Length: 192
Image (cartoon, rainbow, N blue to C red; front, side, top):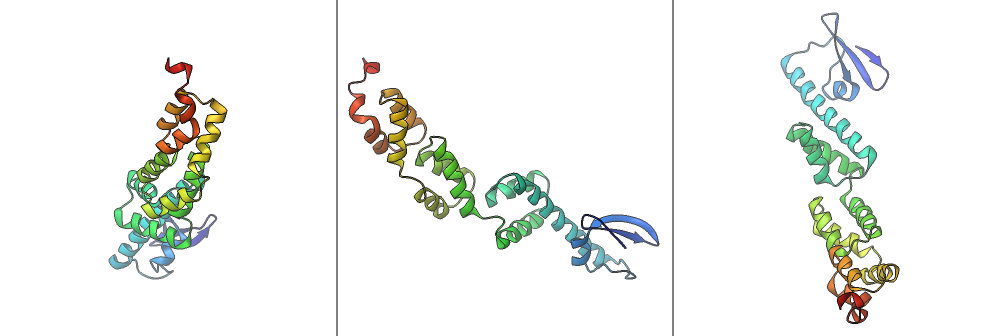
């Protein structure tokens, strides 16, 4: 074995170069210089390689943006990562705090609220992302009140029936829409 840059090791078999493998997989499988690569060790090495590849794929996915555990699992499945390796990678990333549905939900909810989405749309989106109800409700509770967001949108767009429709299609609750534009909609020239 010869260590290479980037956390990789060149493994030789019968004094000839065989493969270049991640050092974590070689260590996890207990592959050492001079030890015979028997079937059990080869199986351990294959299992360690699947886990290492799953963690590398997950790391690349999380490098660009946060994901929910479910979304990461689905992404690994699309990359043909074995179910056991997927589950192990997701759990390892959860344990280290790299993968956190609560943090993901809070960030996603904040981003959607900033793009004029109401609580109903945010709940639906987080549900599609696989975030559980507890994290979803905590994320929504951390946002500015929905009625205040609706009021600000109505002030910016005008208190018209068009704004009311906009708010409804963006997932705002009826009470928030009525509070923001309700009393003015009845006299809206758009309705005549």
